[in-house]
Amino acid sequence: MTQRTFDQFFKNPRTWKEDLVAVGGDFSVERLLYAYKHGIFPWSEDPIRWYCLDPRAIFDLKRVHFSKTVQRKVKQNKFRISFNEAFPIVMQACSYREKDNTWITPGFIEGYADLNRKGWAHSVEVWNAENVLVGGVYGVAIGKFFAGESMFSFESDAGKVGLFHLFEKLNQSQFELFDTQQLNHVTWQLGAYEIPKLSYLDRLERALGECEPWLIPP
Image (cartoon, rainbow, N blue to C red; front, side):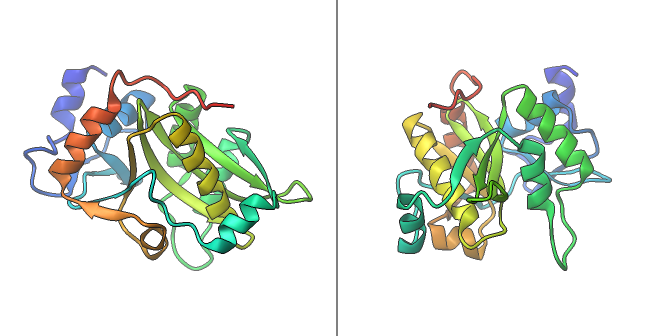
């Protein structure tokens, strides 16, 4: 696929007034990278629906509000933290819903696993004392921009502990923008807030820079 082809497939979020900017396509690495670079993300499969929300929810990377309980668990080294050891498994765990349907369907997992293999998507794994995966986060990183996709916890606060370590690494790498797409109760408690779509797109353009993959610091 060429840049021109994607330009024709996706509506331009800067001029298109609706949140839904395209329907169809695939989860190829090229299409996903084009989408994220233009503030667009997929939110369903069969058909794939692509969105650029207005307003958009983001985190200030230096002003995330973790509870004292989470901070205490981090200091206690209660969990082992890893990066990119079990990316597809983290996605599968994020897809688990006891009662509701999930948007993280097999096509998503296959497509984002390809992104991970190419160095554009990353996972944080949280392991308990028995070396069981009990929490995690995954998302897409381009330049100094990170799109947080989903988080899970099978033990209390495990996902938030993973998120704490993710923010720590992003700050070490001087990231400029963390996209969380849409506010929910958890992200609001952590300090996420909304900005207008056009402001988001301006900040995204600055954060992308030369669009290099993220090399996670040791």
